[in-house]
Length: 296
Ligand SMILES: [Zn+2]
Image (cartoon, rainbow, N blue to C red):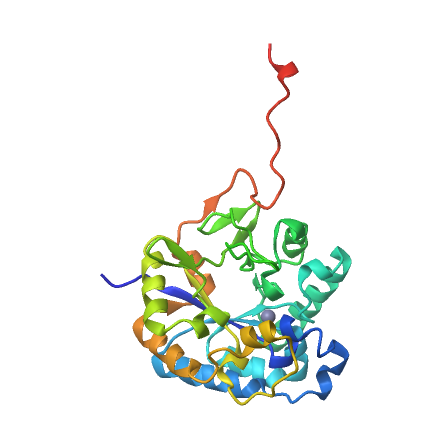
């Protein structure tokens, strides 16, 4: 049986804007860095074009401001344009007011370039968690229809381990969570990022196939992951490992993946999957049982 199509997504940011770089390259220095985003984006567009695959591009407002023609090009190729915020600050490092301004700025820039309403959002570093659940109301107020920022995992920086592994309606905002692959009884986050680069492709493929039958899968990549010659920044050994592991053969793995599966945009995944309405938002604290005194 042919596996279900998986949603393919890209977070469009350059190598120096990622969370692991934050302590060595300040946002005020971004303009002075070697800007290489087109290397990765052009490679991605070329590979998708060859196979007639359409994907969702979560684009940083800062990138849209600097390269409006690049956003227009992605849009002209028929891909879905969505927001990755403006400054790549994780939600937990912003106040609600700052988050609203940051998100609105990115939406306005992207809508001006594409002439279309922006409907989807992915928070930098998957930072929609129980701590930042307040952000959902702001997303709705700004006209977003879906979010794909919750990673069903426990990670020191992000994740909601008890979030359902399905597409859900959280009181008016649809959440398309990031779900891990499965190998034997272990769940491994091979659906993108460092783990995709770290694991041999055969393991990744199996893990994706195993979970694909049960849960709607979303894959995520970044343009800098396809640019092996990007500058090396002085980081701690762990962060250096996370950022640079597997860069040299990542293009090869990615092309095998594109050949082996069918893909769609996140909006298409929502349209073709059951969307469950939740009685209780799993991001909000659970109310305890009624006090005993209320019982007769
Ligand atoms: Zn990002």
